[in-house]
Amino acid sequence: MSTSPEFCIISKGKMDFIYQKKKILLTEIVMLEAVANYTNLHLLNGKKILISRTMKLFDNLLKDHPFTRIHRSFIVNESHLKSYDSDKECIMLSNNMEATISRRKKRILKCTADFKEILKEND
Image (cartoon, rainbow, N blue to C red; front, side):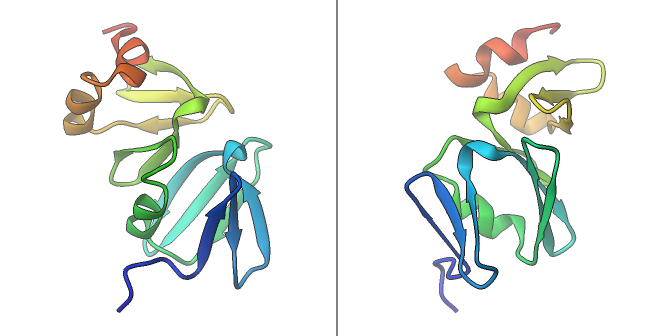
């Protein structure tokens, strides 16, 4: 089994899905959400695209880009973070969606510069 994701190529800031003939700008992706062995891509314009691949593949594919896995079900685009709600333990995103952050990831992310400001709000 190949470790490289052959279903998708990222180049020039675009995610190119080979078999579906779709190209999506990385800046347009707000969040990825796991749905069993599928992944929903939530876009800035409010649309959702269902891809028949697991979050693990996307996690590996996006590791060199500004995306962070905050929960086993969510990967968020760091440029779309808006605020943190400590009551709900979730991150608010630029398209008014929210994503739950796991306790373990919250502790890890509090130490990183990118998330420090957003996570300490209301904490």
